[in-house]
Amino acid sequence: MRRLRLLRSCSALLCLLGAAAAGAGERPVVVATVAPLTYLVERLAGERVELRTALPPGVEIETFAPSPQQIRTLADARLIVGIGHPDFALETAYLRPFADRRGAIVWLDLATVAPATGREEDPHLWVSPRAMRRFVTPLAEALGRLVPAAAGEIGARAATLGEEIDALDRELTARFADRQGQSFLIQHPALGHFAHDYGLRQEALEHEGKEASAGRLATLAVHAKRAGVRAILVQPGGHQKAAEALARQVGARLIEIDPLAADWPAALRRIAAALDEALYVG
Image (cartoon, rainbow, N blue to C red; front, side):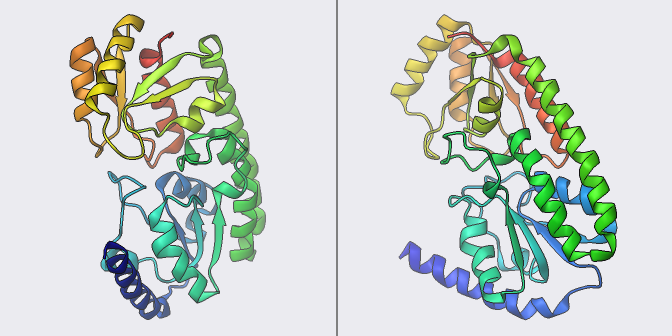
């Protein structure tokens, strides 16, 4: 029954999308499914495109389902820049079926260029500077084809952006060089690719979208007390009850991070600062 409701919802949205597609503006519309990808497109194309972000702030990417009104604003897209992960329902259940029907929409996925990490179940690819760095060139090429008159400008911006991401990667590598193998506790497992890049270990309270059980919390509490855990990471809009309970038991504080923040480099630096306190040996 739930699947039938989803199919009906998708069909209704596809009809709305088709009806709205005729209203494209003068600048080509580019839709990025999450704000960190919006950051890349904005840095590369600037005012040359009309840029929209599909995922609103403060929601979880695994569970968000757009309303017809929300998705209608994305209907005239010429290029969709996505994550490309099967668990991201916004892409798989809503945007990609429409793009397939339209045919004229170009779809570009971060997952196609992300380095193999053994974490294929984790959709949060954008927290990896190395994955985002690999994405700059194909994204710039796609934008250059979309706006041929600006292809040279976009290429120059891509070179600058690539250098900045390389510098960010070097900065983070140096920051965590003497903390290899250390662990951190986090409510929602959003930093697996970041942890892989910099030799850290993520220990998530959630598993497959479910809160930690009482038994798991008890085990984590013993472990966290022994290791001297000082902080647990949480995200805005997420379920924090388990993290709050664990923090009370072990005398740790909660630090809020936002991997989906629009200013992607600043968000990663804030995450790094939070990890300075949250990392522990054990």
